[in-house]
Length: 149
Image 1 (cartoon, one colour):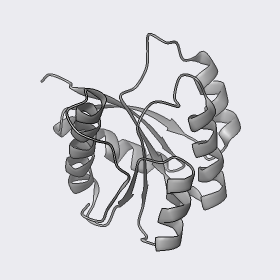
Image 2 (cartoon, one colour):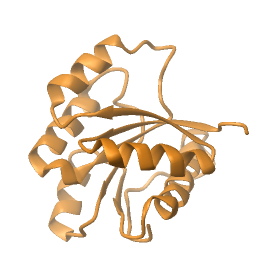
Image 3 (cartoon, one colour):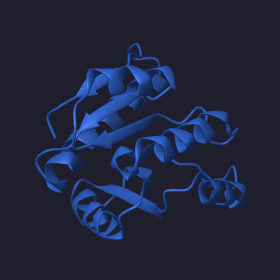
């Protein structure tokens, strides 16, 4: 199996991370996971990351708590190694106010996860493919809100 995309997944739930790894592997998405809800630990992780080991996409669990998640989004969008990497937040809830808020923070995609991890993996693969097209100049970038997963 050829792995096409490597994602950094940040979640506060270790069980979710295990399910994400299993489901995403079936879609040829390699997952490196970080289980935390504190921006301090994310900052430590990023300080150990090298320019040779960058991710093609970052996926962040918004359900860990909105303020901790937004603190992590801010950090990711400020950090020189991650500020240009497409960022998708996911939640089980859809709120127009929250979608606008994360868009203001610089999030590329808001994903409503309602049908389990296998369906979410398929949607994330499509998001990654779209991000690759935008990066190569084949199409224009736009914030998107997906409710299909």
